Image (tube, rainbow, N blue to C red; front, side):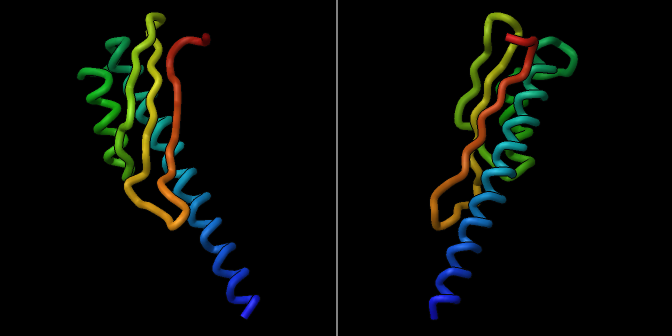
Amino acid sequence: MVLILVTSFVLLLAQSAVLASQSAAAADLAALAAADALRGVSAGEPCAVAAAVAARHDARLISCREGGDQSIEVRTQSTARSVLGPATGRARAGPPP
């Protein structure tokens, strides 16, 4: 019985780790795409581009903020939920701070 409980807990932690990794990857890719749009390398409004990229990676855009130095910061949340709650990711793209 204890073995089943421990195994279940480990699987829940593993699921949460996978969701956190996916959400972080979605945030990274969304920030990079938005930074390209902000600099004019690709077409589109930066935050709309970030939302589209996040959606393609099973995440939703929580926030998108443009910096004055042609940088962009985004936060994403995984659309999949685990028992331990939603996974979020945060990323910044642009020139070094």
